[in-house]
Length: 515
Image (cartoon, rainbow, N blue to C red):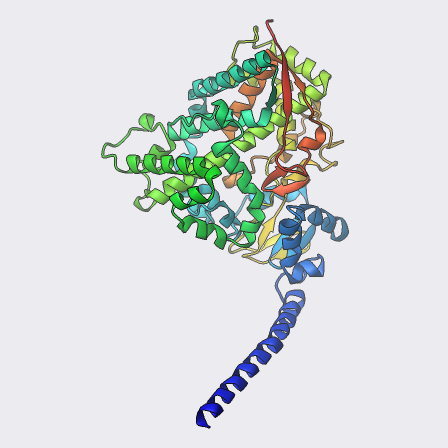
């Protein structure tokens, strides 16, 4: 009887615990809802109540619907004004004149939001560094590596990769084949960054690697970016699994693990070097990150691996896509093509002449084309900033310290008050603004602003000027089964995506110019 009584008692306790949990859970939800709506430090910020109560609103539009929350944010601003609370912990501002205050303040500093950087799965990389002071120290180590002088010094590397790209266009002309332009341009930009940063050639220009291998894996990685954002444990778990097993599970990703092994091998090799390199001998990113002035705690394998992988991902698709966007709009408007070619002839007397970056950046119409392409591309995802100690003031609103505050490049770049007829590709707008002494470039924020602006901006501009000029001057291209819908921003997957996936520009080479 005693045993039966104990069993009965335990069953009763279990039943009471379950009932208590079932009762306490909704009570906890109700209390949390009341807190977030009426007590939370952000309760005074306007916005939909559902967004203030739970992250599920954002989860549904970004994870379930696939990168569509950006359009919900747009609707929020239309209803509630320039400042909205878009989730329980984040404030979004839509005001182009506030961008500098958020990202490049004259006083104080900004940290990154610790939760938002977990998507990069490279915790010690520059892009993932939360603390402002640590970021400043890390950035300083690479500033010289990506300085204008350094990039001008590696123009032969850019020209070499560009020559291989143009050889592929000649082959496409001879074979009358269709060119997946952005895929091939990623081979160009990927080759430059691996040659310069790693000192290695990964054969990205080889036909079997176009649109496949490392570049494709990086591109596909953004498709699940929002799932990883809400469940960062997925990325942490994958980092614990040996690459051998992952290769067996995902054979298509073998190239990525080859890159990872190459980065690791190079990192170990440089870390074990006993000879100290002079500044002029620091030929790769790994040498820059292991120089004598680098703090000892920063000279470690993970730091080099993280930065190496992020540099490849950041320096490949972004620039290639911008080039693809520029070429689409040039081919789509004969007037733009005619004006650009006429200007290019000033510094490129023959079609096979490769002008320098310094020569090309003096051409106003080419600059206008590049600025328009940058305005149409760039990052799609919000970039949160946190003021760790000071209140951020926006009009009559005080945003408490520690609050993630974000803005979207897309909203600036398509603001009709800044860019009339914003959906039109209009290079002349930049030239006209310069004639009126208007600083329109202030609102071109593709590379960000402030101390956290893109460190590879000089490299990107050198590639954009050099590649675009060479391609347009030498080749007659025609769009093939490509419309504006193929490069329309529909989904936010870190980078802009069309309705059915990454942007695509297909062309046929219909001629090679002789004069």
